[in-house]
Picture 1: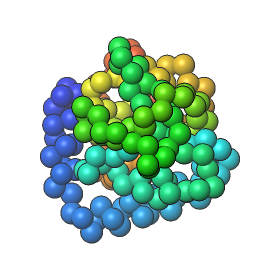
Picture 2 (picture 1 turned 45 degrees about the vertical axis):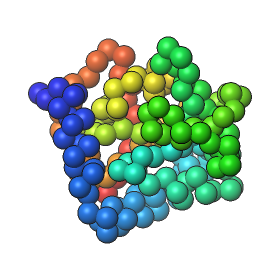
Picture 3 (picture 1 turned 30 degrees about the horizontal axis):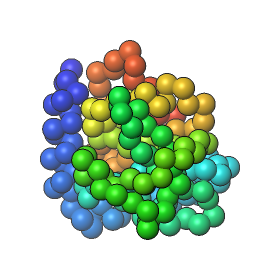
Picture 4 (picture 1 turned 135 degrees about the vertical axis):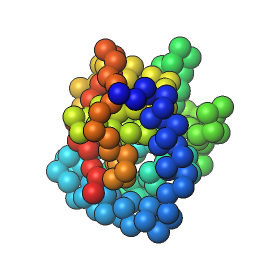
Length: 171
């Protein structure tokens, strides 16, 4: 079985070379599924993420004014909170991701969890910081991931602290 570092490297290469038209096509289909799903419709506070250029395009989610949108903010000791999304109140982090200046924590009822690869039973390989797994360890709400079809893998190493994602939207 491949190690997580190998999976990360392979997926970053695949994402960076993903055909733009195919990315847009899959993004539209996956978001159409997600935005009309029961889990989305029944949620009020949605935790999205600020994607890097090669990650899943979150524009439609971030623009949804019918929901309260929150985004992650990293804290010391690999901790994380979610804060209200305000595109006029963002700063670039050392990770190359935008996050809010605010330190007011908001608890979402649905979290869109980013990552690089997912298994069919919901386990994922993220970027290796462990921020989401630490947060999800005590999270009682709904977790989803929006996944391009090539990011699904048959087998993946699972560590004791890994938290599976409950709902995966892909094509």
